Length: 132
Image (cartoon, rainbow, N blue to C red; front, side, top):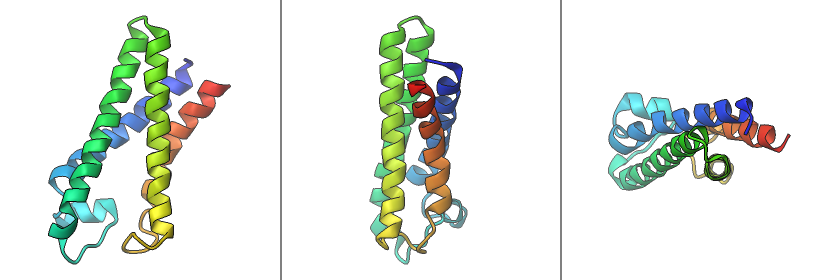
C-alpha cells in the first residue's frame, strides 16, 4: 500500500472520527447543527439516527486506524484489506448522504454537498491510489 493511500485513508478516518462525537453527543446544539448543515424542527425525532450515524462513523474511523496499524506492524496483506474495506465503506456511506440529499431527505436541500464532498474525497483518493 503506497504512501498516498495511507495518508488519504488516515485523513478520511480523522474526518469520520471528528464528526462522530458531534453526531453522537452534540447533535441538538445550534453549533453542531450548523457544522453538520442540518435543520430539524424536532431534534428529538432524529437524535437516535444521528447517534447511529455517529457510531458508524466512529467504527469506520477506528477500523481504518486499526488497519493502518496492522499494515505498519508488518502484516501488510491483512492491514491493506482492512484499510481498503474501510475506504470503500467511507466512500459508499458518503455517497449515500448525497443520494439522500438528492431525494429531498436533507433539510435544507443541498446541505449535504460540502459534507459529501469532504467525506468522499479522501477514501476515493485512497482507493484510486491503491489501484495505481
